[in-house]
Image (tube, rainbow, N blue to C red; front, side):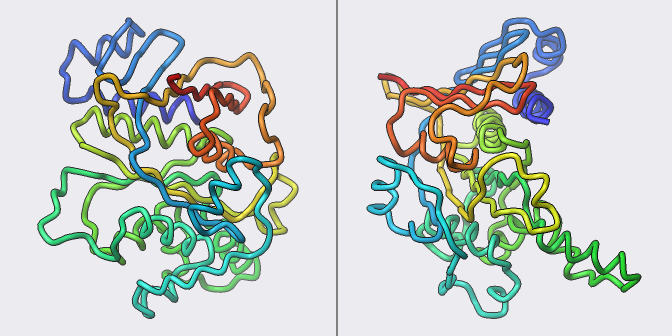
Length: 296
């Protein structure tokens, strides 16, 4: 899935560039945009995290996150997110995972509503979650197994882009958004989607990443540690001479395993890289490997 997600992002990046660019992508020829490098077997991106916000049980302030980045631990417990800035009628539709994602998005935005007259072509949002609303999905499957009717509202709130739609409704945000899932490289795939949108002309892109532990019925399928968390990055192109972050995708011969801080889920490891100042981070889903790095 990550390879397909990245190819889709690159195809979107070059869609407006015409037939010649399309042919270069299809043939795997060397092509370079301002911040996206394309080779036959490798993709690379450069970007800057302009601002960020994050929340998890027991880690809910920038100072606490700074401490966490120095010596990461796996957040424990259930999230308690009041979402005080959201109207009660909307707030009640958010499940715990959605509340985490919405709080991170609101903290990043700095306001509960989009300013009137906001440019609809600027600052799109990418939502990245490996599992999404699996609790709601499992409940719907249980209803089906018992032969019970399904609630259209419950179904609508279970799909993968539902959290993003609810956040957009809450903020009155009519700008473009998309939802990404790509296994253990979900955040990296979200960054690839965001960089494609930057190449399409957006000045900045919001990336909202979030996940929760799988419910008991799916627990046998977990292949990494899990925790409740959400974080938000505002990404933009690096300016001339500015220190930047880099993300490189390549083929992997197998699952290389996780390096630094294997006690964390893959999404939180990406956040740790963004906050800690670490030089590199390697993540793999078995068929594709992504390497995060930063300038000295």
